[in-house]
Length: 92
Image 1 (cartoon, helix red, strand yellow):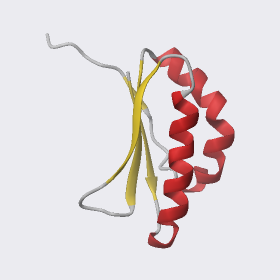
Image 2: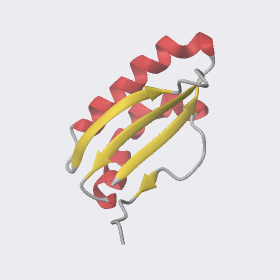
Image 3: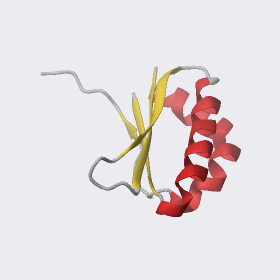
């Protein structure tokens, strides 16, 4: 399962965002079901960032969000409100 949380980060907050986003990834990485994660930046729109993580299943991801809530809180105002959980679809 892929989790994608996008953020719109003003230029002046890049360093602060990066430190906090990496703290979120570290918190998520300590949770059961975590596979891998990273912080990425749009090549075409430098103010658009993404926190991408992979999970063994949606239940693991949803429980991990609860555990990471305090780490995520400072960045909530920068978060783009949209669905974040995507399931893999096998080729038919």
